[in-house]
Image (tube, rainbow, N blue to C red):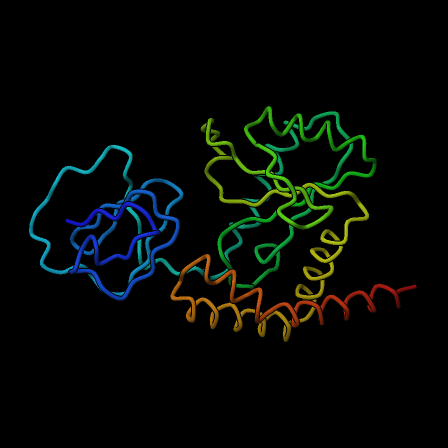
Length: 250
């Protein structure tokens, strides 16, 4: 059995029977029989199975099974539309009485586009005074404010891990709060609308996603880095096309 304590150390200091793998954000991982058991929110990626592991030791209570071979990109399903509707309903209940609107954005909002199964949601407000109210109510229903993560006019909210809401804590999602004149919001909407209306762009984008996931060996963090480097120009181009389409409308 191998116990890898953190990602500062080289793997073979802990186990010579594991080779050729990635280690990312690991706090405590127990590896046995080709499977890993990890603390929540940590990820171990490796390409070769652990061999000759004939002993079984009791796993710590905080460890959970991890599926090493899960594909990042999944086939499109209409369940994503229902997932958004369920999340929207619960968020609206928490924000009852406030002025805002909610949009489903990102890849799961585009019919027939294969994607990571994570719902992207934008909450949009008109008046700056509404933000503090929205923030306060989101905190009450189990979110915390994670700043803008380096992108102006797009505030990030994440689950605080202290609750066990049947919808909000079971459907993977990204939640953003944006003013109505936010450039990131505009990009989300323009990109979504163009991909919904242009099959050639949707299919090209899908092909790029699969290729990058393969290059990243299904590593979520590496995939995000490759996407940033290889897809941004394509996204910028289709956003510009959609912006021109909107401008030409009567």
